[in-house]
Length: 436
Ligand code: URA
Image (cartoon, rainbow, N blue to C red; front, side, top):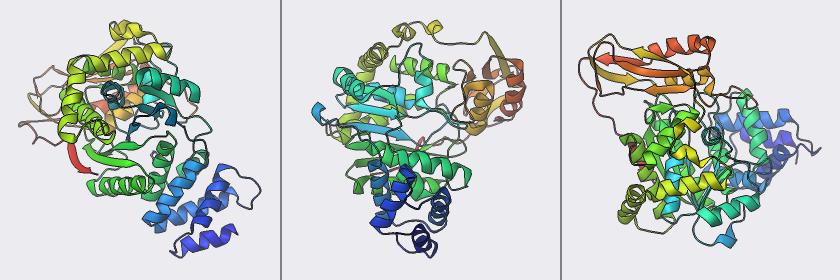
């Protein structure tokens, strides 16, 4: 099969056959002298970006990408394995809260996570702020950890969905990232590799999200549910607001602190509610309880401390220092903080999640290239959030920084990241829509 013919099919708005998709994915997984070069791959990516794919094409692409690498085989564990995936947001630390809660309710949670890229954070970076925590688990270690705790938190190995690695790197530099079928296949191929039976998607929408509008987010959620279902997953997708940071803490170590506080029952209401609802959907998809009961089970796991106990044992099991649960001084922290205050009386009306995320990134908490290092200690605490009343001199942001140069880059963004008005803003729903 000649690559040019495959590209021409999609260029002329035709439907790619399974064999054509397989050839493309095989080539992406390993450029192996089959006649496909990187320029063929990028030309086809652009044709897909411009002309889209049918649900059947996207479903086949997803399956082929998952099959391009290793899939975890968790059959020996029995039970239901369910994960949650978020399209990425600022202060989005729900994985650290809902994973332990769902596991405490009996769901197996094989949570293969990613690192932060751009202004949104990544679960692996947050976990690695816990001294000693090992996210590089072998398949055997994942299975042992799941057997012991029902939850394993780990990173993707090079053997998982290698076609996605090549295609994502090419999309990143050829303006073809924002394509619903390509995003769908990229996300779901990795999730299918986890050996799960169910997946709860948290599709973020708004200023701090990858998808800025409701209609874009809905199209992505719809595609994820259809394609996941076509590949045998029990799916549900929530579209959730990401105009404002989730919770108050943004930055790796800071987000671990807020997650632990939430598991102790002291979390902010938005983070607590979203974590409980997402965990409840995991319990439901696992077949452990119907929707009406699932939420109560999760709230009980939170109130009893069972979720916190799973997180403590998970830290121990994966080599981390469990003293962080009771004493946050064992987490990386900066010795310098500075406050951003307001000179007005009124209500916080907006807080721009994207600007806060970029500020945390500029402080050193994020990376611009996959190989960059990060500073786990830096970040921003939102001391006042939309709807809250402030007076002159009140703190809006508490900035944890390491050096003056990074602070100079971050401060202008934070100074323009909020607005104060005379009246409180209309309350915005956190869960905008649900598809299943
Ligand atoms: N996240 C992914 O894993 N892939 C995409 O294409 C976009 C977001």
